[in-house]
Amino acid sequence: MPTADDADETLMLRYRDGDAAAFAPLYTRHKGPLYRYLLRQCGQSALAEELFQDVWLKLIAARTGYTVQARFTTYLYRLAHNRLIDHYRASRRGLPLSYAEDCPEWVEVPAPVEIQPEAQDDRRRQAERLLELLAELPEAQREAVLLKEEAGLSLEEIAQATGAGRETVKSRLRYAMARLRQGLRGAR
Amino acid sequence: MNDPRDAEFHDEDLSALYRATRDPEPPAWLDPRILAAANAAPQPVPTLAPPRSRRRRTRVWAVPAALAATVVLAVGIVQLARETGEWSPPPESKALRSLAKPAAEVDAAAFGRTESRADHRAPPSAANLRPAMSRGEAVRVAPPSAPALPAAPPAVLEQRSMPHQTAPAEQERQQDVLRAAPAGRRADEDAALRDYLDRRSPEKWLAAIAELRRQGRTAEADASLAEFRRRYPDYRLEVVPEPPR
Image 1 (cartoon, rainbow over the protein chains, first blue to last red):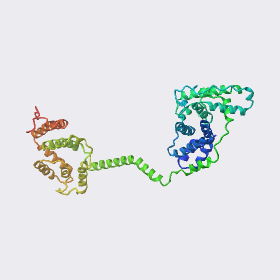
Image 2 (cartoon, rainbow over the protein chains, first blue to last red):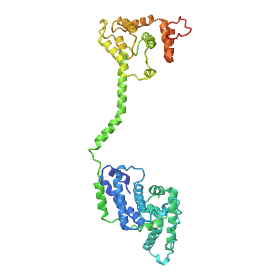
Image 3 (tube, each protein chain N blue to C red):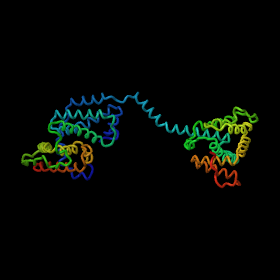
């Protein structure tokens, strides 16, 4: 557990003030979760690597203006979310419908296929099934789950990172969790 | 997810299962690239910092320094004025000053001084302070028994330093009166000034008051009239006469 001296925010402030060595522990701590968040949101490793690189470069470029207004993790994932939204907007498909505040959470999602219990006999397969179910979720719901599980953000922090309202985040998470539970029911 | 309200959205089994999927890591070739970018980012240059902080320090100290300078200057002026007896006079001098001030105003009105109200409200400038300073200098420099020096009798300096014009004849008379007093002797000066004021006729004074009223300088006129009544309690005053046309 990070102490006050090596807390994310302290490290980022030190990096902002010219201590280049403070960046490495920050990077090491957050690179895995951030990469998986991007990979599972965009679904392609090459694209995820590009976005991953962009997010860190953006953090480096924005370091001089950094102030502690929230957890560093929230700040980092806010950058990542914005980069992802830019990517969606630039793509042919455009911004996914699920990001609309008034979008019903059940649209775009086919009911999860019931899986035969005999096929769910080990944890690895369950985990694979979870990832399949996750990939089938609308982007906004999936993002909420990933920010909760990978980044460990609270509802409020997810709302801050994604720029959505707290109630919207609650709604996205509620539907996502229900769908994941439903899809995994046979495996429990 | 420490908020108890978030418990509705937390499923420990599901989270544990998700943790089992945390395999993919960013490719190793990305690490040196990003770390190199972080190290190569221009860091704050130490030599640039001091001028910025010096400027900030200067800005921070500017207001207190200005206040301190103002206080020092004010205390110096007050001390100087006290030395010369200007601002802490004995009761007699105070009375004299109360006589002299409205008189000066009446004189100004009578001799066509065009001093605006804004001038009265304006803070004391260097020019306004100069007469007091000159007087102080003169008092200190002049030996107590020295005869009056035509070049630097304090009251004369005060009169000359005023920016407005006074009627030549009246000015000459004032200066004659004040020159008669030996330099450095305030009691004599005050007596001379009182003598001069006493010699001014009540009619002239009332005409000046009327002129003040005509110019709309009611407060000054009232003050002057009050002073007039103090000076001439027996003078029968029915109507303040109109100024001469």
